[in-house]
Image (tube, rainbow, N blue to C red; front, side, top):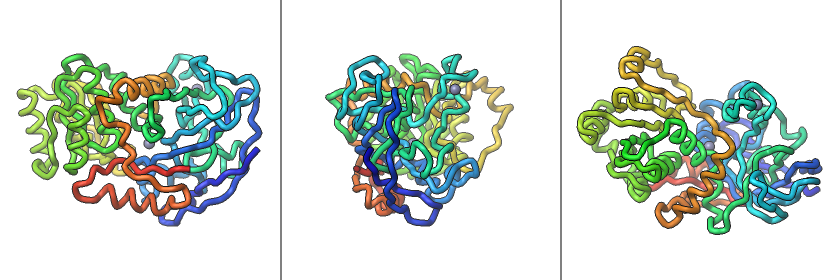
Length: 373
Ligand SMILES: [Zn+2]
Ligand SMILES: [Zn+2]
């Protein structure tokens, strides 16, 4: 078995270190993937800065980051000759897969609630020196244990379209699927970063009549328009929460939105978004995985009869839906261009600094930064 480079995250504020690690012997039913591209997710920028999850005690540090990634089959274990939909799979085929691993042997999994499997985060369970070594996207290899869901990537899709699919796109698709966006709905999307532009396109594709997108950066709002936004609210023009809520009310004839999606990653956005929901509306909270919790105004949620959907992860069939969505709409939305910049893996430190700076830069599209292997 080959060895491969792993970019090691030691702690916030220290540079990544590239080390060489072994790859595991591929068990019957397992697949070794040679990674080709990994995207820097906003949640990883939070961890890199020292905010939130990557620093918490239930995580093993040092570790390898990278959960938005893709690759090609390097070697197939005994007995594997197809993907999760029984389509033929061979070495060299491009694949997409969830970055978590529902156990299929628990209360939640047997009910089909793989997104809520308490054992799904294998990434928190092993150190870098322990089997199966290949545990993240910002490295040369990743190991899919026997039973891992895996899907062949359609030929029509470019490589750069795939890495954010298993987090950003799958997550918003699952969120909007769970709340059931209906034909003719009004949907508000708070935030037009990677998740926001995907949410815009998915809501538009699901038949929403009005998709209102809120962000502070003109480049991002421009991208949202190309992805089906009917209206945009610039935070420069509407700098306060009250003014943005008022604007949503204006745009919806005083009713409010059927569905509001939070993909900002700022806790206060949730309180603002709840105000934008109509009576009996639905709120999908995805981005609020940051420190600085809010206090949920229970009487408001009850009074407005809101359905509030906290959303982390998804069921595995969503990956195939996401692939087919990208294939079907590849000439409609510019989603293949979501990787705006690419760096080789050795330049991971530069890539993170660039992503940080690029995210704050005035007027840029601030789409995602990719590492290529
Ligand atoms: Zn992510
Ligand atoms: Zn389970």
